[in-house]
Image (cartoon, rainbow, N blue to C red; front, side):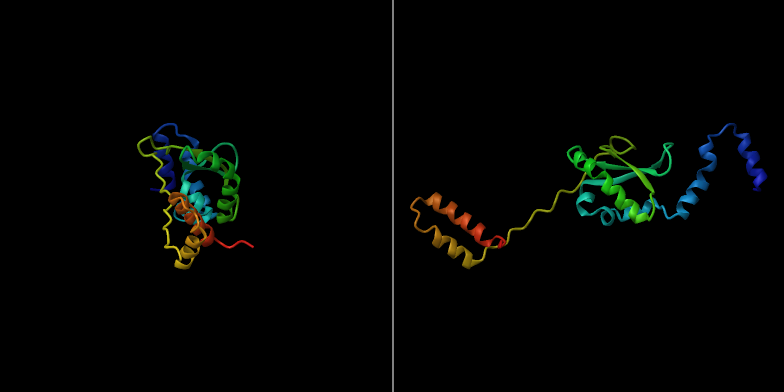
Length: 173
């Protein structure tokens, strides 16, 4: 269809929202400036760090009427929301550094996805459990020697465990 044909077809549908008329042009302009939402999703952990990525994930980037810049919506759990609230400015700076300009002007936290309650259940993987390594035999012998004079069996076992932990811990200067 020609451009005049597009205008005629558009007029035949009745009134339209102004945002709908310029939406494709705005999208092209945003992409030309390097703002690709997929980059934020695929490289989230690299952009904000592993600790933040473990407790939050980006849900939506929306453009509002409040001026320039977009609003980034982050999904998190209720227990992590206060921690993220304190980190919002640092997260915004990291995201904007990734894009090279002030693409995000505000960050909004949510505990449910904007699509609905069923889809919005925040499931974040817990931190991996640390594996216990076997204590050094020399450290075990030294701990046993230090607690060997104690006659009470349970107290001696507790002191021996404490000695192993202290002796195998990092050396402080």
